[in-house]
Image 1 (cartoon, rainbow, N blue to C red):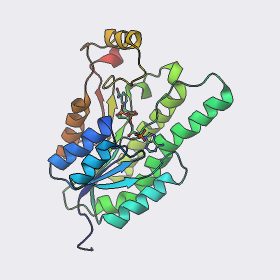
Image 2 (image 1 turned 30 degrees about the vertical axis):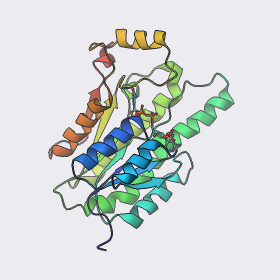
Image 3 (image 1 turned 180 degrees about the vertical axis):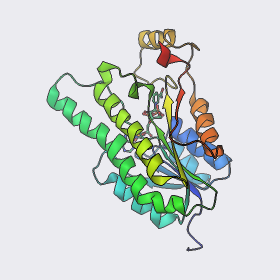
Length: 242
Ligand SMILES: NC(=O)c1ccc[n+]([C@@H]2O[C@H](COP(=O)([O-])OP(=O)(O)OC[C@H]3O[C@@H](n4cnc5c(N)ncnc54)[C@H](OP(=O)(O)O)[C@@H]3O)[C@@H](O)[C@H]2O)c1
């Protein structure tokens, strides 16, 4: 163990903005050293860096993105308290099949290939955590169980991310818990128009966007609970029932 390496750190992928930024800041507020992965430099990344997070850049759509990030994490951390797979690409599937296949490859790389590589490569650091248990959290989507055909390529890759969580829960127990958080309408994208927003909220029992804190609370609860693994926790205001 090298003294200068971070111990019991939390890695958050896609931490430059929105939910990922909130998760990274929340983990820092809880006292965890944070390794914030990002693709695009943002004010959020600067804020994290200024607050003491180690910020690592990488494109997870690149087939080597997962292994490269794992190597960069190993260079700065001696042990990990948690890995939170938040990075995500989200687009309507293109009408043209060649374009749709290119999207499918990106979704697969970001949601399946990179988390698969990171979990395998970082398992020894999670094992080395000084806490009783370490955690991996896969952030998927309620669409992983109930897909929207307009987003079928995205949904299939999120279903892959969800299924992988269950394999890793089996493989890495009892030291590492692996759980899934399934967001529903947490934060609309800029491109969601008023009609789409109204339709989604009309299908959501609680009738409003959840906000980033709803995901933060779910992740925090998972980390605090020593006896929960292989669970799928929906944070969707009840939309999955619509
Ligand atoms: N927001 C919701 O209502 C909602 C609903 C269902 C599920 N979810 C899930 O909840 C999580 C957070 O949601 P969000 O809305 O905050 O997600 P988001 O705005 O789509 O942001 C995800 C992050 O992933 C990063 N990312 C995208 N492609 C990447 C790539 N190729 N390599 C590395 N990083 C990449 C983005 O970085 P850049 O800044 O570089 O783009 C961004 O920081 C995601 O897993 C999402 O699928 C969210």
